[in-house]
Structure formats: C-alpha cells, structure tokens
Image 1 (spheres, helix red, strand yellow):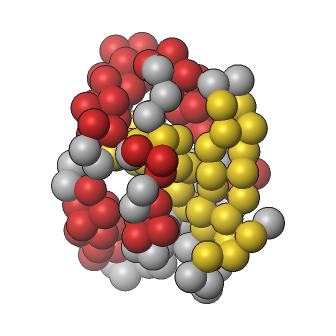
Image 2: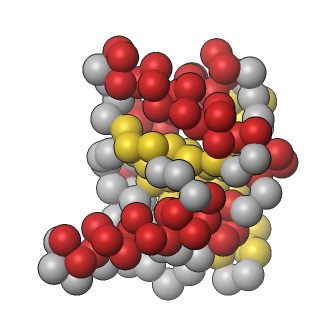
Image 3: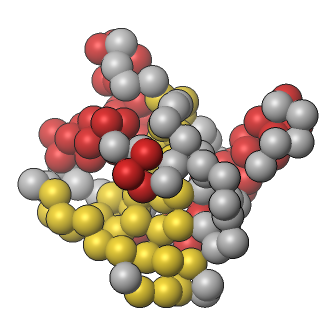
Length: 138
C-alpha cells in the first residue's frame, strides 16, 4: 500500500480494469464512500482530502462502471467506509458517466446512491452539509 500526500492508496483489480482506493489521512470514523469517475482518476486525492474513502475508477465503459458501483456498494465495510449511501461523482467526462451510473442504480432500486455534482468542491460542500445535519459528527 502506497502513501500519497499522507493518504493511503491501494490498487483494486476488477474485471473492468484497475481502480485505486484512496483513504483520507487521519480519519478514524467510517468515512463516506465516493465512487469517483475522472480521466486517470484525476482529483481523487482532493476528494479523499475532504474526508472520504474514494474509489477512483477512471473512465471505464458503462458496464464496468456499473460493476465497480455494485462491488463498492457490497463491500464498504471492508474499505472502512460508511455503508450507505455511496456517493457517485466525477469531473469532466466522468461527471456524465457518474450521472449514468447513479441513474441506473436509482432505476434498479439498488444500491443506495447519491449523485454529487461539482467535482471535489461539490463533494466537500455535500460532506459539510451532512456533518451539520448530523450535529457535527465526523
């Protein structure tokens, strides 16, 4: 397992290719799980810096993206993440892929997902709102 900017990073080999998992530094509670779509996983470190466990999936074809979501939703605890909902987001062309994956999940009724717009800044704002709603919980 490697470290980048104080974050733990590991590769996760899946049928559709290799993804990287980024854990936030110094986070002890179960962090939110973000499935991040961006060219070469760009920006995943910034998303993890917001306090999330991030699966940086790159820009796979839709069936592989769907499979990553289904795997992530079935294994959040093994990653030390909050079990639901899975936050789905992306940047650039990854934002469109994130929207397609989130729409698919909602149509199927599983897994519980929440699409977050606005790239890393949108995720940071979403996590801050969630903390305030929960009364300052980590």
